[in-house]
Image 1 (tube, one colour):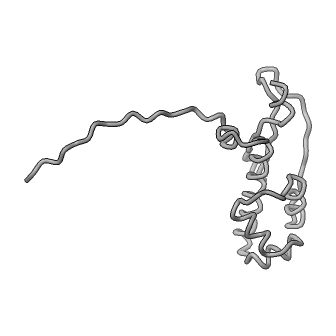
Image 2 (cartoon, rainbow, N blue to C red):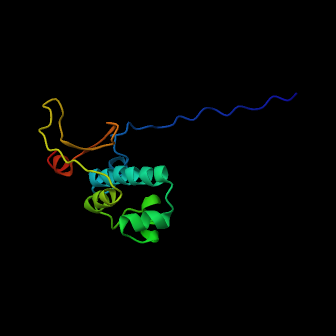
Image 3 (tube, helix red, strand yellow):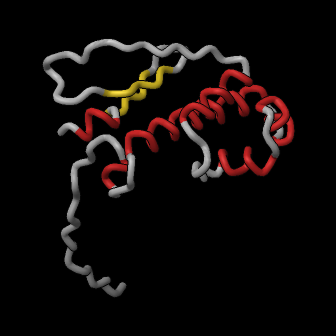
Length: 132
């Protein structure tokens, strides 16, 4: 049996994530983009749980099917945080917005999206990021 040549192991350069992939990629307004992505994830989970077609989901949210397709495909241009919150309301979801001081132990303020089970998705706030 012939021996296979082993190629030398290449070193792979890695960077530690900031916790926001949009910031890591240098995308403009990364905090807003991450918040939108988390809200869309919640919308998608509701659609899946209810086994809605895109047409039925569109009707429930008061939009057309191509817009649902764009949401599911993560094409979020043209969808504001406010609009995504409205879609969640249209899907029968309550939204709570709570404003509180950040702990002194944290450098920047964050935006969090909580799922009903208490699972948190935290995002640095746009204003806090600008003041750094």
